[in-house]
Image 1: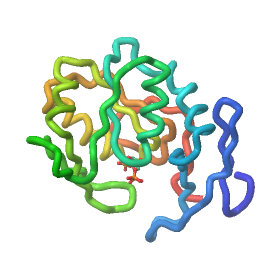
Image 2 (image 1 turned 135 degrees about the vertical axis):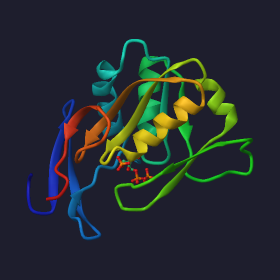
Image 3 (image 1 turned 30 degrees about the vertical axis):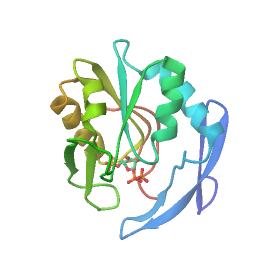
Amino acid sequence: MTNSTTYSVTVNGVTRELPSIQVGEMGRVPLVELLGDFEFTNAVADALVPLLPENAQVLLSVSTSSIPLAHAVSERKKLPYVIVRKKRRTYMRQPLIQEVPSMTLGVNETLWLDSRHATRLKGQQVVILTDVVVSGGTQEALAKLVERAGGTVCGYVSGFKQGDPRVAVQYLVELPKVL
Ligand SMILES: O=P(O)(O)OC[C@H]1O[C@H](OP(=O)(O)OP(=O)(O)O)[C@H](O)[C@@H]1O
């Protein structure tokens, strides 16, 4: 930690001072933001690639914060990626709908996977990839979507772990839950 309001992390030689944000009654939480930061996203993607299971065929991630990371890892591994949405779109056809019971900020979410993309998971070995894992609720909900789509989860990977997730996640950096 560099001072009382930031938390310093370095991945593959790229350092960021994470701001600490007051989250409800949890206290001050160091906040990772890959969105809008290509240099840090690329560093995290480079470091995550060796953690992916060898048999991975597809990456599955979720909007919004994890999208740049999923894209960068996909590009490096030459694996396709699928993004689950948090809002229904009019162009979705017969989406799979999955609730996330409790998330980081205590807000329930609903995940939507368009059937066009669910088809891409069928019969595939799928890695679940997020930028941050806290409770693991999001990764669990993504795993349920994989099963419902007829795929198999072959691993859970996250750039950062912040807390005690309910799933066994491969991660790069453990962050304190509160500062
Ligand atoms: O392990 P969990 O407790 O489920 O929390 C992890 C989730 O929380 C963050 O998303 P966030 O809630 O910030 O949503 P956003 O990506 O839409 O900003 C992160 O990107 C994961 O998806």
